[in-house]
Amino acid sequence: MNDTTQRVLSLLSLLQSRPVWTGAELAERLGVTTRSIRRDVDRLRELGYPVRAEHGTGGGYQLGAGKALPPLLLDDEEAVAVAVSLRLAAGGTVAGLGEAAVRSLAKLDQVLPARLRAEVKGVIDATVSLDGPVTSVDADVLVALARAIRTPERATFDYTKPGGERSERRVEPYRLVAAARRWYLMAWDLDREDWRTFRLDRMAAARGTGWRFKPREAPDAVEYVQASITQAPYQFVAKIRVHAPASEVAQRVPTTMAVVEPDPAHGGEASILTAGADDLDYVAYHVVRLGWPVTVLEPPELRDAMRELAGRLAAAGE
Image (cartoon, rainbow, N blue to C red):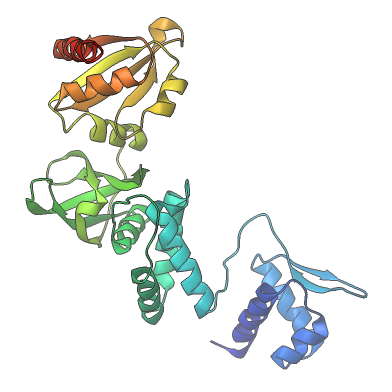
């Protein structure tokens, strides 16, 4: 790194550290003339950093907000603080920030020195949360998959099925989807030649292979993952018409339990709830708890479960 480049980076670091600097202060800190400071400020502006200059008492150089976000220059302590915050946000402790945090963490992790990665890991390992139960996901798995999606490149990982069976999977990763404090990967499975959904808490040793691929046409990631986790694994798929608007029903039904859609046949005054289950008594109980009139569309066995539940409730009330 030549002296000019190093001085410009040092100038940028100073401008980021406090709101306003006079030209004389900057020149003294960097050991150059105020004329050199003016030239270096022009170099920063050419790189996209909006440096404003105010004349007179109280004036000076100030790093302002531009139309686009230029790269930030972080010292070691700032980099560790940002990485730790992003990992906590990616774990679901900040509502709505999970996916953006993973993308940002993937970019930061790519340039973070090994010594700082170890420091970040130490902080995370020493941190506990009083929040509700969160399914643990290795942040390195999140970062590796986010990076592979952004490249894009094929990825591999070790995967454990619910029954304990382990295998290595080879995929073209498409999207990461966060749902109810749990992370899922939607990817094209190269061995099964089909789209698949994978839970990240069942993964280990995720890594990019370096083999690029051209993204293929894909279904909507959110809809696909929601259908996969609410219907595909179960023996029965129940469809129920709920006589209430879909917007109201969706507020009471977690996205990981069912899909709620407007019922076009009833002009928005009713909705269709689709949920998978191995035990239809479970579906009957939760549908009744919603509090609205319902009509069972399928399967017929669910009607029998609803009648049995009604009988038990009536008997208990006598």
